[in-house]
Each structure stands twice: as C-alpha cells, then as structure tokens.
Length: 175
Image (spheres, rainbow, N blue to C red):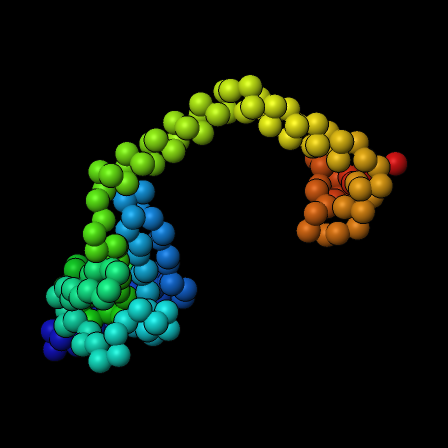
C-alpha cells in the first residue's frame, strides 16, 4: 500500500515535469554542459551510449568517451513538491558532461585575459573609432526614410511605440 501511495504522490507531481528539455551550456563559465530531461529526450540527443543501463532510484552513473566525461543522475523536477523518496522513479534526469582534461583555473585565466584584452581595445583609439563608426551607421539607417518604410512592412521588424500600433509607428517615422 505504501508503494502505491508513493507512486500516486509522484504521479500527481508529474505535471511539474517540463515538456521540453532544459539545456545549460558552459554552466557558470566552468566548461560544464547540462541537459535536464526525460529518458526519451536525452536519448534523442545521441549522447547516451547504445547499451546504456539507466540508474535505479537516485544512483549515479559515470562514463567517458574520447573527449568527455559524463555524469547522469535522477533529479526531482524544479518546483515539484514532496519528499525526495516520492520521486525515486520519476522520469527526469540530469546529464552533465565536461572535457576530460579540463583545467578550470587555466580556462578562467584565459577568459579573464580575453576580457581584459577586449576592454583595453575598447578604450584604445581603434576601439573608439569602431564605436564611432557603429554609431554613425546606426544613425544613418535610422534617418534613411526608404529603409524605415521597408522595415515597417516586415511584421517582425516593426516596432510599436507607446500606445500606437506597430504599422502606425513605423509609417509615421518613414514619412
């Protein structure tokens, strides 16, 4: 009877299972990628090996290939209520993978060096010239009446002003 109650509680929370897979790329800049989804969702991505044995309950499964190391575990869906035990058989998994020879410190230093180089360039004469050129091109297109009239005819490019319909807003600007 307790097992039936457990399954009923978990199935009542099945509406908290997202209908689409959640993909997180480069989690916190650590070079870790994550997929959160059902068995079918994860298998459809082609990452799960052919003869894979899915974990029972909350057991973790680890494996490697030529480039990556993987970690798969069952998770309670975000927002689901109830004890962890109630979700031991729910079809929602967390797959994480990262490069085998990844060095977080070296990656972080390289990222900061790239950010610093971009900041130095942005404040250099060449950087200011690029910004000036970009602004000039922006104002030239903004003041181009023919281009603005063309944009007004494309629904996804038509922008709505305050309290005006998109077509009215762009048509007035184009005149």
